[in-house]
Length: 496
Image (cartoon, rainbow, N blue to C red; front, top):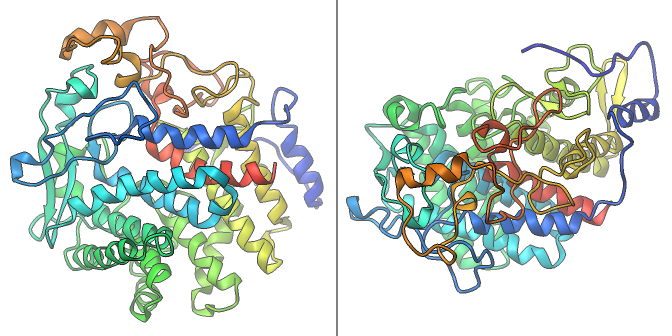
């Protein structure tokens, strides 16, 4: 990847100077006074617009109706529910599990800052975990995808009208998928912490299932894109390998269960499963930075010296992302946005910013900072870095546009999202078939259904944004963009 550090820092300097220069990176004067609580409310509401299955009586997104009510019937299972990952009508298990893990982590670390929105965040997790329990109900089997992506992507249909193939894809002992199974185990374990005091019986169910799914992932090793390549690639292909998901699942099971076996597994497999690889990545396909930050909390609390190397990795992650470091592993746009090549850049912005914030809190409690050669990254600096990215999303950017739909006076109008861009069932009761939706896809008109809280893929490296459905990399929202943003917005709503 090309390296374009935003600012070159020379010689020794103080952290305060570093912060000042960072704040001057935008091409506009940074505005103040964002309503982070309003953005938090909307970021959680987004998940209701992504729901699949039979919608509950308290459904707040009224332009959506029941959909995909026969999912799983072809294999004799009830696999209804869960979330559509983005602007299409497929249920991809890998990113859905990662979304669930990050929503849970957001609640675990920042739920105390969510106020009345905490109950809605917990509901968002449970909508996912109820589905994950269904797809893992058969031992040594995980149903990892509902719907044929090529069939779906050939149509522009509301989920309520969907008549594309609802093919069921699974992994099992003969067709392993340690990546998606490991992430599913992580999601179930993380969610078990969320429900530990709220619903102890449900929490135990989640934890027990996480243990079983992890054992399956570990004993039948392999990447799911090997056996299911034609179904999951290029959509959610495992490019990074399954090893990080095994460690990630073990870390969350260690955190949720406190059982010695998981601590021993992590220590034993740290090198074998490449814990120190690509430490500057974090997303649905690469968990390395998340693993290192999450484990480092225990090191910083002074009770897990055997995990010290993970803290070293976490410090390395921070130093590799900081703007101005000569070997920074990310680009920054002229307006100050983190940018990584590929699609849906906001997934990197929110996930990496979440780790900045989480790690800054862990460091603060231990009264520590991160040494980066001659420079030092304090917890306050990491919080400011995270806040700068959040503020960019909410409108402090060269275009003065919020990239969250429904927040602020100016936001994307033509997002790449079938349900949002087609008339609702209430407004247009007649079925809109596969190719009949094309005229809505190509229309220059704004989407008729405002998908409040949806954060799109965002601008390119020059801060330019085409507000147009065909530009899906920039205009499509995803659940895994929003999940870490929930935690960020919760914190900044309490600490503006």
